[in-house]
Image (cartoon, rainbow, N blue to C red):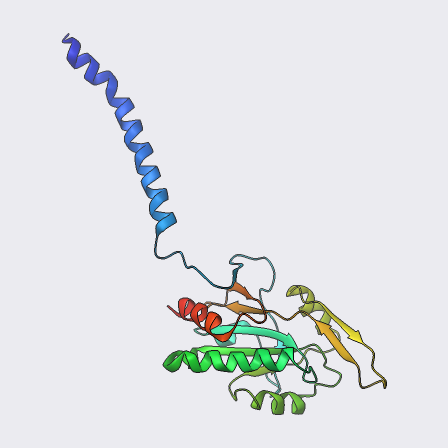
Length: 207
C-alpha cells in the first residue's frame, strides 16, 4: 500500500470533523450577526410566561382579547382616569407614537386597562380615551377580574386613602407591554422612554 495514500485516507475523518466544526461556528456567527435579530430600545421579554392575554370588557361593552387585534402592534397600559400625571402622559405619548408612524399608525392599538373600576365607569372611560385617540380602547375589569389580570401582567397597585371615601388615589406600575402583530408579548416599555423610542420599536415589530 502506498504510504502517502494511507496517510490521506486516515486524515479524512479529521478533515471532515474540522469542516463540520467550522460550519457550526460559521452558523453561530451568522445567527449572532443576523439582521433578523431585532435590536429594541425597550426591554425584550419575548417568550415571557406572563402578560400573555386578557379577557375583559371595553368601554363600549364589547368583550375583548388579544386575538381581536391580530395584525396590529398592541400597547397595553394600566392606570386610572383620575391619575394626575403618569397616566395622561403615557397615553399622550402613545398618541404621539401613532402620529410618528404615519401611514402605519392604523396598525397600532392602544389599550388602557383600568385599575379603578369603582370610579372608572364605561362612560367615564370612553370620554377619557377620546382625549387621546378615538381608536384607543379602555378595558374595565370587574372587581373580581382586576386582581387576576394584574397578577398575570405583574402589575402592582395600591389604594391610597384620601380625605373622603371617593377621593383616594392609586400607586401603580407605570410601564407598558408591547405585543407583536401575532399577539405575542415582546417588550416592556419603561415609562418616560419617550415616543420616539417606542415608535422605533413598533416599526420593527410591524416589519
